[in-house]
Image (cartoon, rainbow, N blue to C red; front, side, top):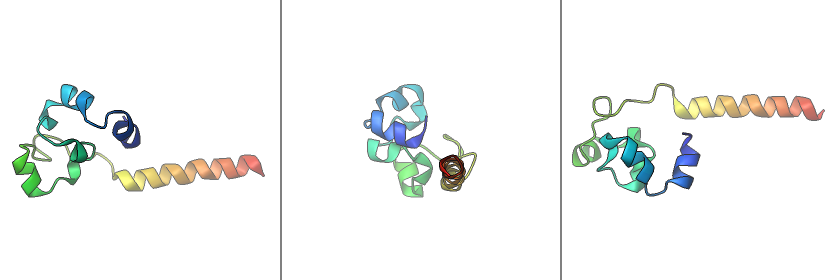
Length: 80
């Protein structure tokens, strides 16, 4: 589920915590991007990134930017 959709429709993380128990102790404001947890937060919330929860497979911001550029490129071609 895309990040924007998750944070908009599951602000409290109820769905995520139900289906991803590794994130059960992570508070809602950190839940939607768990790979950004600091080492202290990982210990505090019992969720070690790379062990209990995987690192992102792709660089998320870079991939989002690339997809956005591709979409806008197609839209520009179709409006000319």
